[in-house]
Length: 172
Image 1 (cartoon, rainbow, N blue to C red):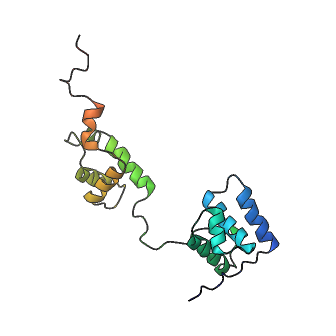
Image 2: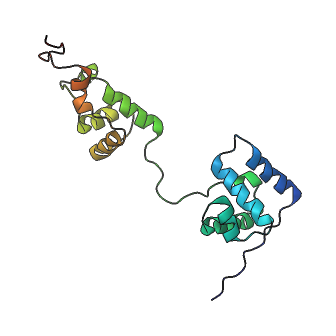
């Protein structure tokens, strides 16, 4: 079954000028500049394969952005080049809450009047709730966040404060 020809893109002069400015501006994010280039080449009559070769992208990407451009013709130029909302559950915790977790994990538990020498994920989760940082958080999620950040609060005593019996001086 032969593929149909790509839908033509017909820019009006204001759109062409805005797209060219986005491509030429040094502060334009690369993704946006690339998408603007796709639309400009489509306006020149290039097909998906030609656009892909010229911009070193897949034909599918060229096709997707051409179709999105045409479908969203009533939207301003800069918004037409933005990603669409993605499906899925939004993030449960804000970046601020996660940062507070990391800060808490880097503090000694004694600062919070806890009778422990090292944080565990369970104690960090409980302290975050106690401090009002989050309403609730699972121990497993705390562990995952710490692992992603390569934080190991249970080992902090060893790299922050060497054990007292460790002799760091070289013997002569």
